[in-house]
Length: 307
Image (tube, rainbow, N blue to C red; front, side, top):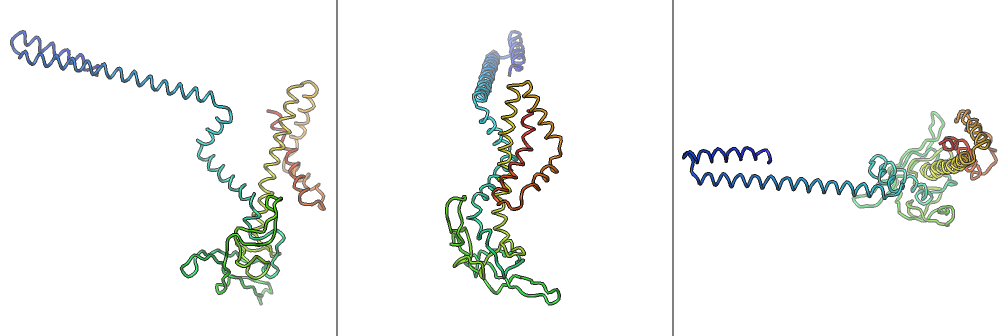
């Protein structure tokens, strides 16, 4: 609007000069003067609004800076994590995986020791939610036979047999979280879950008649926690040795740094394979689990101790 002011001023001067020469009506001169005052007032208001807007924006930026500096490191990390959609989606997926592994015994219809002698290499049985127009989950049965040409046992879905499914059925006993005795499973065949006729195998069975869906769920407990525990041990060991090396220095620092270089000089995968092969075969599964976790942590601490 400030660019209009000279134009309005020139127009007023022109009208005024014309009025003096007797060519313009004095009323028009008065209107031109009022128009000039209106332009000037509008220009002042615009400048005031721009100044106020700059003050508001500056205050908002200042408040954002103060809030940013007042947050802790964990809060800043969490804010950055939430704003990253890919990281947020990945975190949710990983969280669901760990939640599934935590309740694997409840979510699976059977236990690891359950075997179906007459259901070897059974194909996956799908779940059908509606039966004759009403909500009644069921699974088709499986019939087994002998292939005359190959003399191998074969199994196929039998659509003439239906197994009704129920939620929170009573089945084989287990320990929830390894501590709480329980018998309820999320789903199963109505009337019980014996290792016989009337079983549900979502992903089929293996050559020993074991339910693959159950083995995948319960096996995820080892697959997901062994890396998590190994990283936690590596983090603790690397942090402690790194702090000791930097704090004392001298010969202690030299010994720790040479040990780091010695461990890092070996290829990781062959070293893992060699240490894993050294585990006695007669060890129970729990001891093997902790041994593998310890092996992972003993190799992975070097990078953190050097930071």
